[in-house]
Amino acid sequence: MDRFRPKYVTFDCHGTLINFQMAEAARDLFGHLLDGPRMDEFIKNFQGYRLDEVMQDWKPYADVVHNALERTCRRNSLAFRAEDAETIYNRIPTWGPHPDVPEGLAKLAKEIPLVTLTNSMVAQISSNVAKLGAPFHAVLTAEEAGAYKPHFKA
Image (cartoon, rainbow, N blue to C red; front, side, top):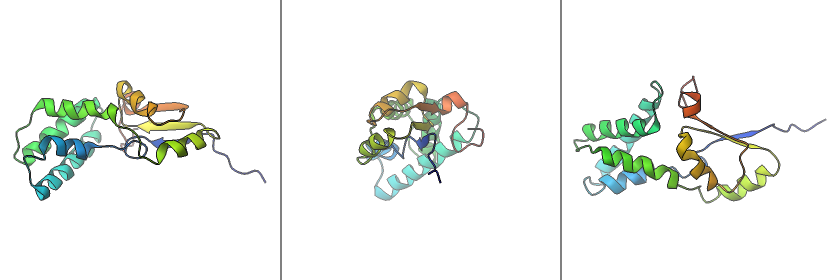
């Protein structure tokens, strides 16, 4: 009997392969304004509002971050500055993989083509994928799909 061999192996990118550091970015920008429990609540709100934003009609991820951060600041009685949202968004391409990812991906890529499905933008994702240390057969973005995961349209 033949052993099953997948044609491709697919991965989510940010959070699964890439160390998605939104919470750290928020702490860097707002940690001096909030004590520990309030900062934890801020991060929880920011995560929830990002999910809410991606479940709506597609918009550029910079807008997702902007809108979610603005809503989070409002909910937590903090002044919102558009440049803070831009700072967070611009950090995304600088983030690299979780420590255990490159070695495993490199081994797997020798056997089966890799594909990543990402909520990232085309202009940003290549920087993150380059840090993974393995070749990818395809990189499919929410921008190209016109919808974000976990939206059914994606």
